[in-house]
Image 1: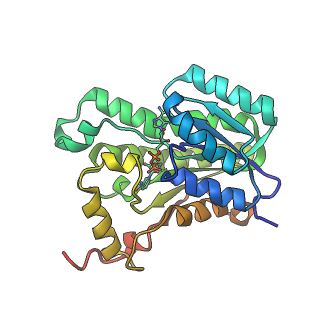
Image 2: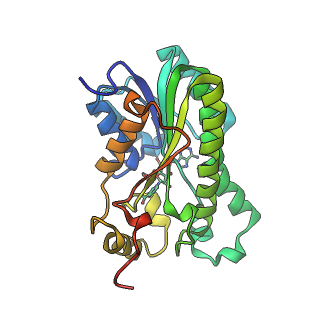
Amino acid sequence: MGILEGKKGLILGLANNKSIAWGVAQACHKQGAELGFNYLGEQLEKRVRPLAEQVGATLIESMDVGEDAEMDAFFAKVEEKWGKMDFLIHSIAFANKDALRNPFSQASRQDFQLALDISAYSFIACAQRAAGIMNDGGSMVTMTYLGAERAIPGYGMMGVAKAALEASTRYLADDLGHSRGIRVNAVSAGPIRTLAASAVGDFKQLMAKSARGSMLGRNVSQEEVGNTTAYLVSDLASGVSGEVHYVDAGFHVGAGDPGE
Ligand code: NAD
């Protein structure tokens, strides 16, 4: 019997079969969860729907997390379809490419607001709606990166957004833990080649450095991030909340890249 048997959960942020959300979806499906997904626009629906169907999704609906009305409509559909739910996985981020490529000191107010809105506030916006229909003792997980606490070349604006996301994780955990017994955690994944990652400058070099500097001497897979996320939303992690859990083959606690 899987560790998520009998649980219903939303996975937000599936774009294609390279997405971290796809690794999470496969792991949660393997562990027996019933899953629901969003997609961003018709273009992505064509990719998301067949993948979601492969893991037996019972809910596949459109939602742009930049729009409150779309979020309200999406969560109303979740409630209508499922009644209650048990877990939420937020795997969404966005920043203008230029905001990551230009010198950080030149950041515009508009680029800052967009990156923080879609990559950090959206977790709070999803959490507040999901909590309303979540069983007590439910669980939420978001995806973050080491650039939240270190200045990683090419990550700039997204690092600031991830710092806000990690702080939001702790405050959500405190709020929803006390009021509802809901656990909230973040998974800090090592670099994985995805659509979103292609916006990060010198990503190839970042991956090579991460592999060399990690304790396992390699990068991590979507599957590994997915398995850890499945554990975090399961009852096996019932005592874990407010945590940033690294799935980076030990890179963040290592001595760094020996090639440097
Ligand atoms: P991805 O491109 O597959 O996923 C990003 C998702 O965000 C896409 O599905 C996209 O549709 C969605 N999205 C963007 N704007 C949206 C909006 N307004 N409304 C709804 N959805 C929106 O890339 P990924 O790498 O799988 O990214 C998933 C998460 O993992 C992100 O938070 C990313 O920062 C994080 N992360 C990625 C890496 C990596 O190396 N790939 C490492 C650590 C953390």
